[in-house]
Length: 198
Image (tube, rainbow, N blue to C red):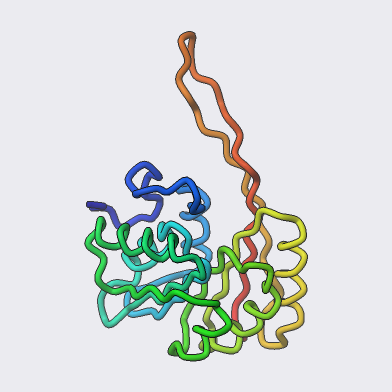
């Protein structure tokens, strides 16, 4: 269904559910890029929501045993992620229903961790994921709220095994046709925090 090697699958290609968040395509492309994924990598998608990041990551790591381990505590999100994996023919991803803190200890070591929703347990999840990262592995978190950003930065700084964080704020506007031309509509700014395990 997606015949390109690059990330950034258009949002309208995914099945959607109004109650389940989706990481928008431009932000998703930046997050995947910051994760430096390659064939054979083991990846976590924590707080997978719609599964858009899970799908994109799985396509990037396909081959040589690459796999994505997605987790969400919302049954609707898990069901939607599974449907979107099927929609894109992705077979190298598994989705777990549960709290990240309960699922992560059972997962294999990761080459990259992508963090979306944390349900307020941001510091604990970042710390736990940092410990599961292989040397040179990367952790990438997308944040919308200032409080979540502060928690991610504090957790990265306090992990003891992560290099100083790279912080990038993304402000996207998308064009929408009107009767007289094209109007640019702003989306919420997203701050992407990434760090490498030393």
